[in-house]
Length: 287
Image: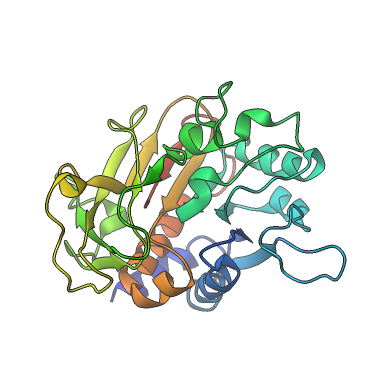
């Protein structure tokens, strides 16, 4: 029933254009985003374009390469999905990204998108880098609600169960999702509490004692308080709309259908027909 409702929502959006960018060195975004694009295209009617970090010498996919051809596709995009990690892009490739972000169109970030830029080559767009002092916390904190801080759980040892934040049980992005049924093999990212601006936690990350969804939660300060791993961000400081998913990756999308449904719901809710208002930043973050 949930997929039928999503399909109906997507059908009303007249096959909007979605650009997905895969350029992380840890979570196999080059596998995860084609999976997501195929589902969004075949089941929900979106037109999807997946871009990769490419080695210009031989044309192979190389997540660590500071080269993402095809960014001109953003000019006609209605939604941008980012799965990037500490990418150092030159000015000519940053420009179409910045033009998109500052146009007010929606953004969905996955896992490492909070720290997707580590800009050493680009002088013009230094404010976007993950540890910017000019634009506190760079793109991550200003647009998606937080930048890279630290791992909160033990990476590769402790996994994460999603607990619905109090008062968010009826949020439209969480429609059809029950408390505790989201799980991911990745650990929780630490964030600075309280979240900036008008950020609204949707899902909290309960740190588990092992790498199975049935493992018990750990005791102590790791879960008191729990870090928000899904958040609606309304900072009012910059532009556009955004959504960030932290429990992601090639494996995570396969094992957690509910996380994928959450992303699909957010896409259906976030993609709006033009004109795009240049007002607040609205985001959702799963970290």
